Length: 206
Length: 263
Image 1 (cartoon, rainbow over the protein chains, first blue to last red):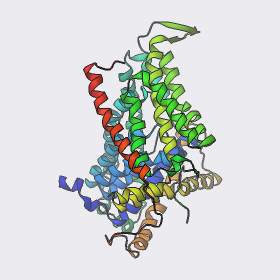
Image 2 (cartoon, each protein chain N blue to C red):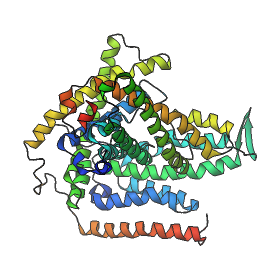
Image 3 (spheres, chains in turn blue, brown):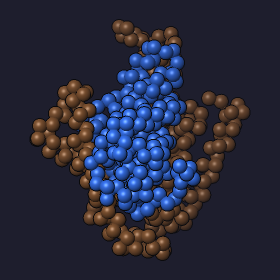
Image 4 (cartoon, each protein chain N blue to C red):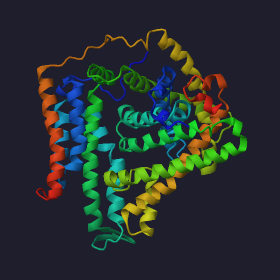
């Protein structure tokens, strides 16, 4: 695989830009619905980011992640999510790298799902490592979400606030990103080939 | 065609009239300052925020979003740190097994103050700035119009997408989907919600791309703007002030590391 293509501006075709806008809206609509209507203790607010990464490429995924976190405050009112734009960039980028490796291709069958789970888990581990310093320095470890319960539990186990924050991320993020990757994989299986291939990296998921 | 207004509320105060570019720079300062300046400056920053919001006539929606809404973040910060700070022993008062400690508050209160200050600034910004005016100004200053397109059409799509999510969920529930109950049941409710949303969006992309291309989206020629955003002399002064204030922040960091400024 050509690493230079990870940062290629050729990822930003017109269909990519249209998808990025819709993906940002999907992130926010799904994240909001899952957290407030279905009330799950996971975020699921990076499905659009992962989708762009897989279909358009790592750089497009990273940009989508950053924009989604910044735009969130512009529409639903400011939340604690904006500082995690850096994490979102890593998530979109990694999804793009995994997409380029073809792990979302239905040709792989059952083994494909194994790779999707591994990819989602690794992305979650990276997300946890990137998020912990942000959550610690900006919010002191608690961000007002369902994950605060976990932070409180871990504070009882460890004697260090930063470790408790890192442990909370270490539980929440790999779970969340693994589910996100599996859901994206399942949905992409149902997407027609002609729709996937209008995106720059689409043929890798065919 | 809905307009991309997002959280914007119409108004005629001085903050509404300020050009989005100096306003963006000032917001950047307002978000960074609570984290850079000494803890003692945080109350002053919060008061400054409220003074800005109220003098600009942002009124009740501003107060609700800048003071009430952040409580969902700030109360957990104060309470979880106050009661569950590892290794703390200086108990202020105890309720049963729970003890409010001095160390916990000393850690939590400055953080809560910083978050409140940063929240207030962003609320004042998003309630007083039209996203399309902001992006128009940024394009004039050299931002890619393609980036502006992504930002604005995302802001436009969000209310539609939220509405769509609600409708799909209701439709699936009408067909027997269980969206309440155990965590397992609720996790399984996610796929029937996401499937129609994402596949529908992906299929839309081709049509929208063709529509854009047939209107010269990729032509690369200079564009004319529908909305003109004026730059008045006061905006130029505000831009200079904001740049000076921003450049002062790294100086403060150096002085704090060197120990010239405490706290």
